[in-house]
Amino acid sequence: MTEEVEIKAVLPDGWLEVDSLDIEAQGVARRPDGKVVFIEGALPFERVSAKVNRRKNNWEQATLTEIHRESPQRVRPRCPHFGLHEGACGGCKMQHLHVGAQVAIKQRVLEDNLWHLAKVKAAMVLRPIEGPTWGYRWRARFSVRHVRKKGSVLVGFHERKSRFVAEIRECHVVPPHVSELLMPLRALIGTMEAIESCPQIELACGDQVTALVLRHLQPLSQGDLAKLRAFAADHPGVQWWLQPAGPDTVRLLDEGGPELSYSLAEFGITMPFRPTDFTQVNPHINRVLVSGALRLLEVQAHHRVIDWFCGLGNFTLPIATRAREVLGVEGSETLVARSRENYERNRRAERARPLAATEFAARNLFEITAEELVGHGSAQRWLIDPPREGAFALAKALADLHQHPELRGGWTPPRRIVYVSCNPATLARDAGLLVHQAGYRCAAAGVVNMFPHTAHVESLAVFEAANGNGA
Image (tube, rainbow, N blue to C red; front, top):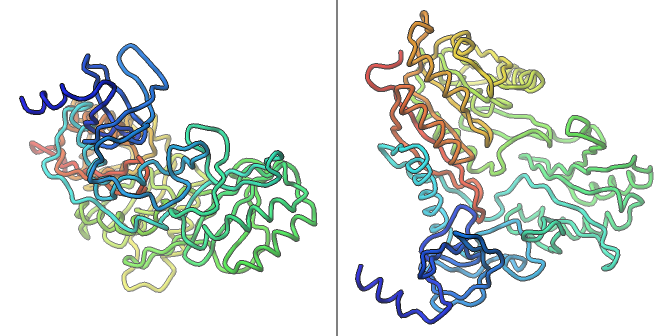
């Protein structure tokens, strides 16, 4: 400890020693007076110089200008558009950091959130769920801009900390065949009459189809529609969808051809979806995540299971291959209908094992009460997969029932809960309720590297009933 202090004390004036990385992938250093400096582009254990862009009383935000001692975890970014230079693409934040170190940092973010926000420590740290680190992103939203000064059209992600569209010619986090479409798409839009009124192209890849959703603010001419059809003919597997207004207005340009869907082969499940539906960005990780979550859930043939925030049935349908009965709950009647349709379709398919009896219900899960929770009946297992806002109302209702047993009647809480999270802060908040007020212990937690090279932290946690709580 004394040696470390002495080393820091002799640093040349203006140099900073980076201690850690924050959730935004910024290096964190401290000045001699204790003031925190967040440095974009810096990595842990590096000694750097930085240009301060923003000053507050307790912290500063800066950009790396020079590395005096480089981290052994620093790597050469694969993409030529990544970096701190003007016009750099903002789609990735961690390409300069070895992917193994990325995962370790995300694990630390999860553990820090659980402890500092909720005073919860998992009894076991799960091995990270990892997969391909390049070409993994099967969903993306590309901005489209006609730049008159350059006389060209740009298709890509925004620049770092900017509303401008980065001028990219390739992208290594989308599948190679999609990266190869970027320049042809720029050329296509550049020839269309609607060059000024198409602000976005949304990508959604299925097992057989690459869906491109063109957002257009004005009706497209017959000439522009013909150009879209010719583009699809020249690029096999591409399927154009048109979106004149909100997501509900999306329609397929031409019927026929392969269906947009993905498979969960381990469970014999096929999931059709629309390109604007929520599905996991990384299909490789999703398959492992579904399998791992069910393994952690420990579903048995006599169990009833509730899947909260069930979406299109990504977890519900696989659970139905293991359990006696399943209930999928979602907030939208339309989404519930889609989930039910997916279930019926897979139920009718030839299968080695029939799907369990499965029901779907619409419920505002951000306002659910203890009484409403009881109304959905007892289940031995829960799977919770909320959006970034988390599942506070659900955890609060469970806590209320634990603290007021008279509200239960014959209802019993689940013995085991698997919580899949895309926000470690809301997971920690809800974990605090489950552990300190609802009678559970955090048996395990770990990260899921769903988005390599970004600061996004996906994770899952397992909660077990403690002290005889639960069925």
